[in-house]
Image 1 (cartoon, rainbow, N blue to C red):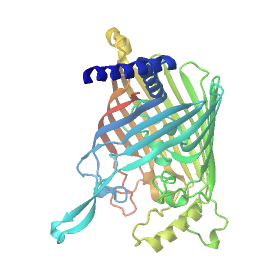
Image 2: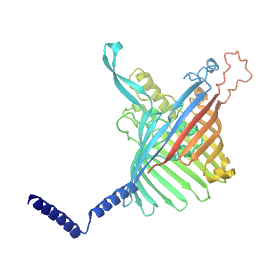
Image 3: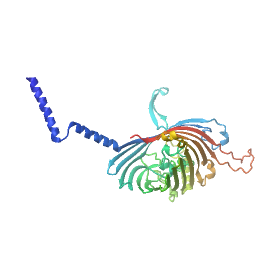
Image 4: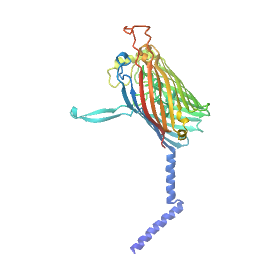
Length: 460
């Protein structure tokens, strides 16, 4: 009897469940299908990707930081080698629908950084924090974008890329031939330049435009050898925004396979810090102006790229005097994050590179879509193109050429090999005897060999 009653109860429950499914019009299989569809829809809105570089370099010159001050003492120094992870980036994006999207990029420069707490046996078992490795971790992008229409007009806000110059707008490893990012632009400007701001951008037929509103750079972080490169960083938990700046970029695609871009930046840089200067600096603004022209051509199995960048900093001498005064006052202060060096009034960088895909002439490699570029590059940059202290920093005027190979077995991976030669202008000694105390020793040239492997792509 118990068995019969239990069987009847189970049958009734099953019948009720089946009846409820029929009432709802949804079966268990249908529910699973709906759930699967929602998951697939979510995944279709999600983007996961990134890029990275691993490089081995042998430098055939001195690694001493004094090699430019007394070059004759370092002419015979041995070569030195380095392994490096210049950039490893993870990109996450999501499409919320109705034109709203999210974009993020986390960048680990030179392997990131790390610290650890250790118990030191040699120091009576004391706890001690140790720096385990160098490098940086940055939120390079974190923005919300609202698109209107078919992309003709967009509003983006958050941590955004400042697309001034070629290397900031196109900084992924498949967008340059060399093992490291283009040296000139990466020296005189922040690279990759990113700041919190608001951007208006879009595409109208053969034109792409972008206008940005940003916080200004910080002149206390400008240096003689890197101009404004470190000016976008902040040692605080926030970015000081006493001054504001604007950036504009326009790209044209009218010619098949070619893009021409014009970009500019303008903003005040002095007083963009927590420190308050004296009244003698009331009229100092540190207005920074940058204009850059760049192009890329990808046609006829050639890739050719080029750029020219010019920057001007007003009040450079007054800022140099302020920085030097602060250096004298704070040089023994621990944790001082600023550089306090002399600054040039103008900086300049230009470059051109060209590569030919020789696999385009080999039929079976062409079918497999493999690429093998042989390239050459020449560039010049000068962080002291003019200024009161120009004669003190002759080594800031550098030239560099490179030749090498780029092999891509698949679209997302490129293996790079490069020989580069950095050199300087020889000083004008006007026939002086090398033994004369007035004779100036030329700087030692700096050749190197680099091998690297890179990836760039979307995984989802």
